[in-house]
Amino acid sequence: MIKARVTVTLKNGVLDPQGKAIEHALDGLGFSGVGQVRQGKVFDIVLETSDRAEAEAELKAMAEKLLANMVIEDFTVEVL
Amino acid sequence: MKAAVILLPGLNRDRDMIAALTKISGQAPQTIWQTETSIDDDIDLIVIPGGFSYGDYLRCGAIAARMPVMRAVREKAEKGTRVIGVCNGFQILLETGLLPGALMRNASLKFVCREVNLEVANSGTAFTQGYSQGQIIRCPVAHHDGNYFTDPDTLASLEANRQVAFRYTPDTNPNGSLNNIAGIVNTAGNVLGMMPHPENLIEAAHGGSDGRALFESALGLVDA
Image (cartoon, chains in turn purple, blue):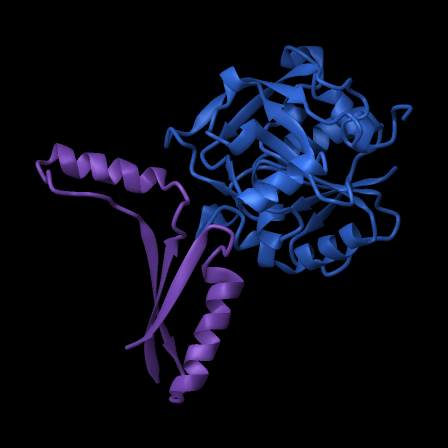
């Protein structure tokens, strides 16, 4: 079995109102050194295969087909 | 023309849509559950209503867009059948790739439920020919993720091809959409997606009937 993590984040240049709100909230809590916050999603996925290359290809396909919206998001795949 | 309404778990504007189509066409639309894999040949108009399909899990419309019925909708759309997606229905059409772009969280981060003014940006589409070019109509909106976004090239081609069917008037843009976009059509002109709810403004009891001409147009009830 392979454990993997797919991280989906907004593309550069795409406005992230939620990230902005979190940024302001952090500032309100006294964390004054925050330059920018971008919010994303993390998917922890367990695959039955033990073939690393096969897992990576499969995870990439999953991200492109469903986990990320390629219009506004990018993703990274990490086999843990 | 015969209409059908797509049903998915979590949609909640389906009854309003069925009522509007029934009142305007004089015939109850067929209803099609998400697991259906084909849509009858005699259906001329497919409508995907609003709501919160699959609880908006992952992204609004993302799970619904991968259900079997949406493959059937795509096949019909590619053959020229008219398709309307309202609110969550618009989000689903974007997630299937039948329309370009994405709908992001409202710029205010708030759920917005109010009436807006829409400009008919192109009265030459199959869905807007019952309006005049530049006409301002009233329409209710109710959404949290209606902030239309796309890359600059796609935006330029949408504008160049006159694919923007409806725009919010600048003073009533409820969500921060690029170019005040409220509704767009595909390049072939047979698929419309829009955030506002025309089905909720079709008779005096609603306080107005500005939404009626959209369905009359789509159902072929107005002279082109």
